[in-house]
Each structure stands twice: as structure tokens, then as C-alpha cells.
Length: 123
Image (cartoon, rainbow, N blue to C red; front, side, top):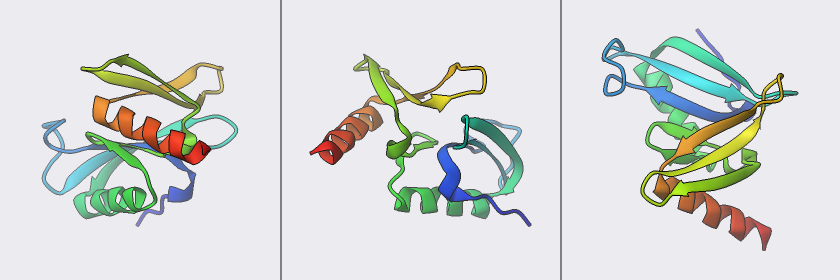
């Protein structure tokens, strides 16, 4: 049994057999970036497929944006910068203990959705 506090999640990367052939039909991986005094990343190995899908659904229901298998909390984004309209952009969700930024790459659609959502919240 496992409990993951989804209220502390800034972003999550879901690994399926399509991304990693070592992952089976029922087992998955989840990389999670947690909020705190610094952004911390945790890898959860051997997560059951239903657990991964349930977490993804819960995060999407809470307003997380999806870019492929990456889910990002728009409220966690400090700033975002478009690299190129074909490849998308980078979002910064915080800083590590060593002061380095935690940057995640998102596709163009997710980047545009993020910018629209953030611009709408500022009004």
C-alpha cells in the first residue's frame, strides 16, 4: 500500500510501456516533483497501472495541464518561456536546494494553454 499526497505535487511524469519497454502492462513508474522549502523529485517504481491512471485523473480534475505524459500544476509555474513554436517551451516550477531552477519541457499546445490560463487568472 502507498499514499502520495497529491496536494503537494507540482508536476508528475508518467512512464508507460510506450516510453520505456522495461515497464510492463501492469507496472508503471511515476516521477513526481513535490513542493516544499525546495522542489524535490521522487521516483516511484513499480506503481500499478490503475494507481498511475487514478493519480493522473485526480491531477487533471484539479486543473493540471497535460503535455504528453507530463502533468503540471499551472499555479506552480513561476515563469514560462517559448523555445520555438514547433517544439514548445520551458516552464520553471521552482528551485532545488542548490539554487538551480527546476525546468520542465512542454509541448506547444500545453504551453499556449498554460499562458492563456495564467493570463486569464491575472484579470
